[in-house]
Length: 412
Image (tube, rainbow, N blue to C red; front, side, top):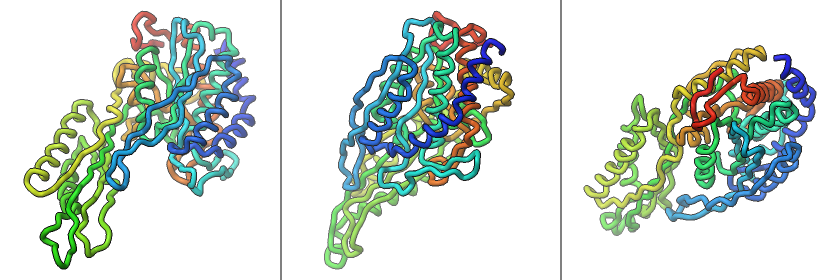
């Protein structure tokens, strides 16, 4: 540990700067559909990460395709992604990821930070994920100050659309996942400090139900209720819930004046599964239910969407990576544990192309996606020290991995 201590102690000296910069980042609204806000966040990160003397590149993404409240397919512009790369020819290549966006739109009342107590900061995105970006920055700055840096190359991707399923950046994530040895993603840890080892897969579906409008009093029987047909489907969808499948009906739209038979209704729902093989099974069951209703009635139901993130399994390579991180934690007096989660993130996408990935290396905090979101400020230095130590041990070959075949096991 002695040869790493100087660089780890440097991180502790950055505590005040880290807190101040996190506040500034938090108060840049970067909701997923706020393209201008995403651009401001990129500008702020380019300035902050310029200390690393690495190459930077903007990436234009394809528009986000979604179904609007009229049942029409529309395209929504997305902000740009930003990649930062250093030493692409080094023998060890590490991917680091975090998203630029938050769940808070530009018109959200939750726009500012406040200190709850001396160790708790409340604010939009302070835990998910701007605190994690700060951890990444200071870990890399400490690593680059060390004599071990020349042995390891790294590449960062900041994407603007993680909170909506990464519809535009998923191809980039898969591309980067295939050309690195390991992945480090800076989503917040669980409130107790535990890391997440495996995750469910997630699908987002929209069903558009079309009927025939009619006057309720004069021509009720000539109408076809889009709501009634959709309700039949919803009842059947709910029956798909099991020990292996979570199906949540999250949003229903449709209808209007009660004296008109409704000709349009829309349902949006989320599916979570544990096993990759379950994805096709549940997708086929949903399609069969819709086909049955369309065949046996005058229903006109159309399905859109599907799985955007496969399940993230805890294979032997990922377990080896966790053990290496846990060993670093012990060196720093941290007792790191892990547990599974039903939540999803870009770690699912990276793991789907074979990249061993830890995706909860960000801050300790909680109440994410709500106006009570908070970060525990002492975790900024704590997690930055953890990541910096891991990178230095990896670069100094105290932690080793197979350099010939990407994604091979890591050993301590």
